[in-house]
Image 1 (cartoon, rainbow, N blue to C red):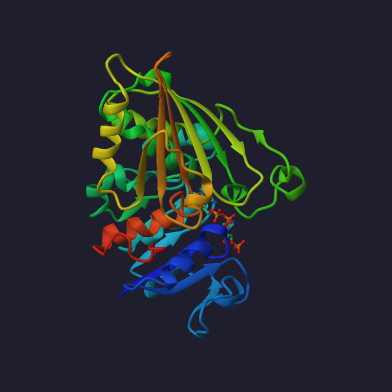
Image 2: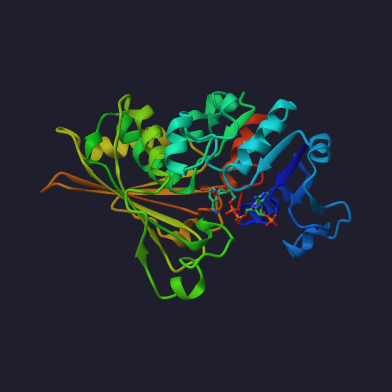
Length: 342
Ligand SMILES: NC(=O)c1ccc[n+]([C@@H]2O[C@H](COP(=O)([O-])OP(=O)(O)OC[C@H]3O[C@@H](n4cnc5c(N)ncnc54)[C@H](OP(=O)(O)O)[C@@H]3O)[C@@H](O)[C@H]2O)c1
């Protein structure tokens, strides 16, 4: 059994992790923590959890968690995550960080986009970007896994095969993404409370969203050159899911068969990407509650414009599901363990 800890267990991603790890055959929930001053039963967070006096959420204490776990999931705000990750990493634990703290390879870029000093620069170079579809081999031996952001997951999965196969103009990428409100975490803000969101729909942080450099870094790696995207995030009046529409110019000679082949060959063996083919577009309801990323496309011959649509559940493939997928890869467990819905 792999002994697992969740730091920040009371947030949206922490609660999803409790559910997934609770049904995992080879993982054991050994430490759950939050900033609440007194311990409380996990059932207060996940009512369907079995009654178990040992599964309790406790105030965070580093040495207690260190001694109780082999792997730790950090579900903390950025900066706080980097500080905590450094301690567990130095103690020889497998660290899977759901925050943005280790996703960008450049501390300077991180500081420019997040507006804070990087709290663990000395281990930044050790982090592996945990997108299995791109980095599975590196994840197998990583002790510090930077779990990707939710928007980057939906965007990069839709673009990676096309850039790898040189089928699109890398300077033409427009990412038009819509997220459910859980993407912002449980903390209340004027922009995410019920009256701002219900029966409303709006774009925000256009070309300013902190996930932009992460997307560009991953795409740059696939393309072998620098990429600058246009990114328009929106907030949907619903709880979970991200629908991403990618608007792209195809290169001369690239038609629908080549595009379908690129997706089919890249993702045919992937356990959590379902390529649906040309003219088949996913809906959020298809992926909510699952770790799947569904992908479809349409190529308009008259203007050479390619539209790729992807759909994910931001809390699963966009966060906790992908984190467990990474843990499974790292620990040598079947990749779908804990993540099967059928
Ligand atoms: N939500 C998503 O769709 C999503 C997707 C991908 C990545 N992420 C990232 O994953 C991380 C967790 O996201 P989330 O949505 O679960 O956030 P959340 O709902 O706001 O939960 C954050 C957790 O961290 C604890 N916490 C907050 N401030 C803290 C501090 N200063 N020190 C220690 N603990 C603190 C909170 O617990 P208490 O208040 O009980 O202590 C809570 O358990 C974030 O970095 C986020 O950017 C989120």
